[in-house]
Length: 366
Image (cartoon, rainbow, N blue to C red; front, side, top):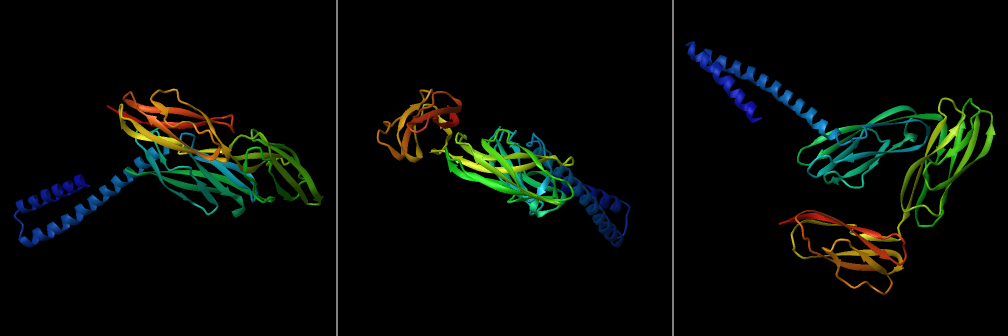
């Protein structure tokens, strides 16, 4: 804007001096000045609009580069009422932290979840976009605008598409197994109904890598209508974590032979670590630090071993011998090298074969 202002002054001064040099009367010069001011302000307006347009194009470009796996997803043809989810990975490819400032869906049929909004350099999170096919019939494409900042603002638009068919309906729109403890085997069911001219049928269910058992049975069949029940049970050896994926119904419909069905659930860990990451930010070399973590369990436990491959990190408290639902461990940290600091520490307990992993990271200064 400073450059534009100077350009304005230069243009105006040039024409005024030319007018004065021609020996015009005071009234003529005043009319000339008024004309020139209006004329140059129009020029400045055009320059400002051009500058803003170019800046907007550049800003949008660098945000889009963070979506390396694409900016769009098509769910295809889906039953009325189906709940659809797609994960858009977002990677901070820049050398400074970036923050997802806002997510603005273009339709009430869209919702979203983001596990965290601030991304360190080279860190990746997913923006989970959920589309509710009970809110529309026929084809629909929705844009979701994502703004990134905070120092320099940029935006990218991701798009999801689906065609909601009215002849096939899910009730409810998804399989939800809930959040359960490890080893539990919950079961959830859903009704699938078809109304149309086909002799419609389901021939197979494909679960892929989902840790579930899925079955189907026909409930009724009459002219123009058929109903099925889908039953999904969690396997007892399902790993801990979140379930958010699809199983697929194979049908005899040549126009849409595969029908996706969303499965949600979660297997809670018996143990949790707070915080899961110790961020030291910036510390001086050889400066001693003490940091504590808290381990919580669904039942009493004891810590059997703390495994640190780096001598700069050591547990400073004796391991607790009494079982308790909560245990606290203190770590002594004394970095011996300048530069980035990143180390994993494994904490073993008597109730889990898999150790808890504590990440300690930061930057060590001279």
